[in-house]
Structure formats: structure tokens, C-alpha cells
Image (cartoon, rainbow, N blue to C red; front, side, top):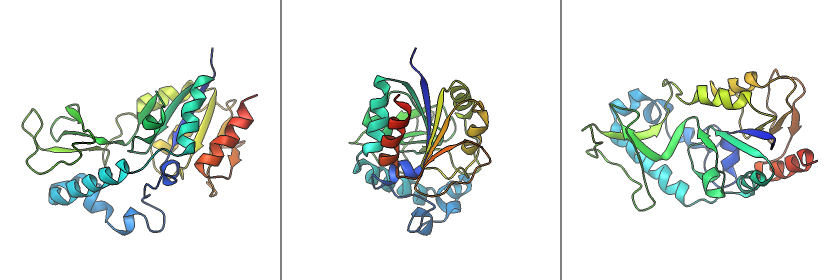
Length: 229
């Protein structure tokens, strides 16, 4: 049976592909207020602004390509069972070829009914924008399928189950400051090796973490050299 490698990826995973992060200098938070574009209250106050914001994010994301880190993780499926739990809303993992991807915070290319979170629609490259008046089958306005601040994370229980089955746990490009995603590390058994790939120092209480101070692409390459034995 193949070893189960579970990967938790964050914004740093996609930064090399040119996707702007929220927290870094020059990131999206400097252009928009969180309260305006990433909360239910912001959507209720100015839905047009929120829809325009995510329409632009979709257009920008579609111009990007998976980087070597995404591709290398997909290639690992030849020798391992690889499950990716991502905080990212882009589809770069899927476009790189990864077959088992769980999006904790939603997906840019999916929209849903305001009234029924389960009534979802996947957009295509030919249809990336949603506007006021675009309705779901239940007659309610469509909204981005994004977990906004203040909203629950429906996929967290599934993520916990996946993490508990890991033989190797890998963290890539996340500061471990955003919960509940950051709390997934607490469900990794103490005897399971944990690798953290990030060019910056990441603070955690977990002991024995193998830190790889590299960007995602180079870091995954180093990771494979360490575990492919």
C-alpha cells in the first residue's frame, strides 16, 4: 500500500504563479478592506463591489499557470497516495494534475445560491463573471462560493479525517495563523513526520518539524529527496 502524504497548502503555494496574497506587502488587503469584500456583511452592504472583486480575481487566476511545486506534488501520485488540503481558492493544484484536492475556503470557479449553500454551479473559462440579477434555480442571487470571514468552514471535518490518516504531513506556504486550518496540525499523530516548506520562519508549538526554508517549487523538490528513500 502506498504511503499517504497529506499536504496543507496556503497562499505561498500559489504566490510563485503570480497570484497575489492577502497578507504580504503589496497584497490584496492593501487595496481592499476585509470587511468590504470578504464578509457576509460586506456582501449585504455592497454586493456589486464584492461580485466585481471576485470577477477580477477569477480573470487574474485564469491567466496564471501551475508552478513547479504544484506539478511536483501531482507527480508524487506515482509513488504515494497524495491528499491536498488547500486554503487557496484557485484551481492550480487541479490544473497541475493532482487528483485529490479539498478546498477549505471555497473555490473561485464555483458560485452558489445565497439561500442554499449546496446549490452550486461551476463556471467555465468562457463564463467567469457573475452579476447582480444572476440567479440560482431557487430564485436567489448567486454569490462566490468562498468561505468569508465569520462564516463556518464546512470542509473542516473532512479535512480532520484526512489528516488523521497521514503517514507524512506536509505544510507549504501558510503562516499557520488562520483557523481552523492551522489547527489541523493538532490532529497529526506525534510519530508522524511533519515537513514545513516556507522561505519565512513559521512559528508553531509542534516539536520535531523538519523545516525546509525554500519557496514552494524548490521546497517540494527537497521534500521528495528526503522522503523518496
